[in-house]
Length: 237
Image (cartoon, rainbow, N blue to C red; front, side, top):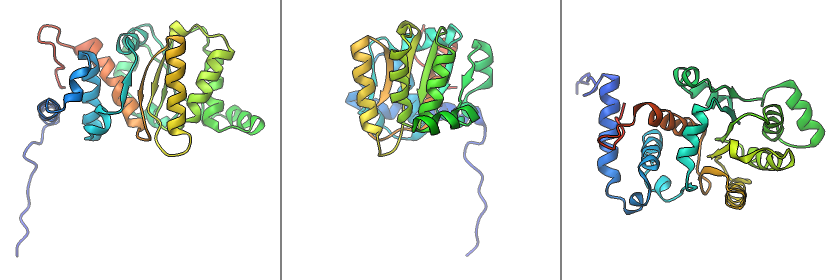
């Protein structure tokens, strides 16, 4: 039997992306749960589906506070610091958008000072890293974004409270993944946000990923830049 070489039916990046979003938009319309979200939230959800190919997992577990998308866009436009828990998030974010909106990405997890803090305080490096970052940028708008380590969430909340940070300048974007502390950390974050009126987005349960943080931020950037208000839909690029 001969093996026949093949080429992909679509081989142009832009065309593949457009077709992907068309397929997502057609399929997601079959999910009743998708209808409960507002237009901006739907844009972000579609971006997460594009990143993961997971429909039920995202639609059934994504949690938005009432004004989460508005807050996220506003903070990005206000040159918010993006305080993250992994360098993978740093690597994945669009340099174009970061430069355009002057959002500095802060990840201190590999800093020598953080190693020492974690050792002295008997915490994870993720805990120490976000504590250090919040203290350093306490007077600036910030998006606290977690895609891996749930201890980041505990540190973020506890430091925000202890440092008496102006919570109007804060947004939480929480997608840690795994088993230990994951569900509990997200429940803690949800309680914190509802109690103090802090805006945020959480993927509840054990599922998550740093790539989902990147996808969410890119969705917000594109909503600022590319949202078609006349037709009310994402342009899919």
